[in-house]
Image (cartoon, rainbow, N blue to C red; front, side):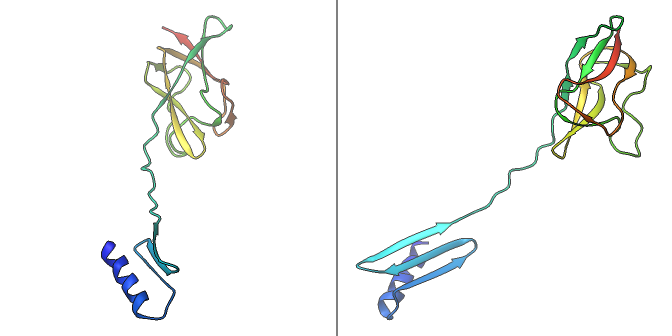
Length: 147
């Protein structure tokens, strides 16, 4: 880089020009002749952060007033999905047994599909949200009868 700048300064001194600028590979070098010669180098490199796969979100259970059932709530605002894709089978159905770490649904937030995992063992008694409907933070999603 220093050799390039030195050559540009040399060319300015040899010819009757007051400034020269060159841009190559995202780096811009500009040399201007004034009372003295100033060297200016600027460059901008754009790097995108790697996209990490979102980590599953664990839905913390809370006690329900309904016959000792536990409630799985939404940990975020988004859109509720029962399956990983429209053509896939739902993660769970009423009557299914679930264990900690089992994916029970997806909540899409800002184009990220967050898998919601159960923290409890039990049997799914009721699914409270329709597929594709918006959910709020803390909204009840499922009722689970603990084992």
